[in-house]
Length: 239
Image (cartoon, rainbow, N blue to C red; front, side, top):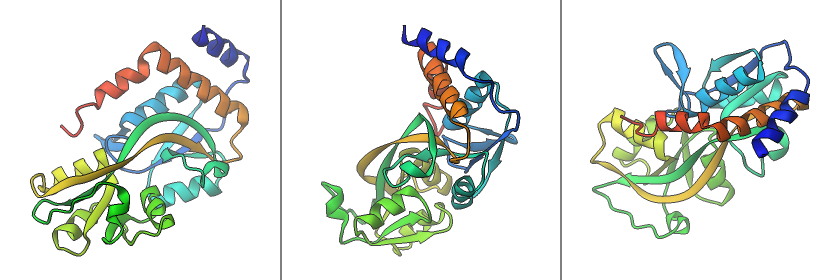
């Protein structure tokens, strides 16, 4: 019944806009990543499927995260994904989702064990973060000691050199960087402290009708199993 109502609503909405949407994203496996010249991933595949169902033309731009995010804030007809929805960002965008989920972890060195029962226990430690990332903002807002870098791939290197005590990243993002650097036995999860929802966040000038249509189409692909198939495609990432 809910699926039928969603389809009826979609049929009543105006046609999608003729101008292509600019969809900004970053290289952050398994949500969005460049493989054989194509942007794919849990978030990317779902967003492309939504555009197809909504008959909306688009182009995807792979950018550093801060630029991807700020361009979507400033530029009409622009969205950014996969974006964490927070109270601080709520009024800055129009939201489609959630399209995926992420868990936030603190990582440490296996040879320098740090015992954390809660996030509060990490307060004495210097934490490495990715500049402009929501996890940096989350920790800074709560008064934690945070040191940022321009690329998250630099943080595990700093951790191994002893320049930071802990590193904050996502479950999958962190696992990919650890594997790529060959630190699988040297860098380990210390604390899983938050589960976040990831969205397609659109500039406030994107038409409400299009945002509504995309949210309707998301409910359709969630109900018909298409979204689950995309999740399964990347379930074993990193391979």
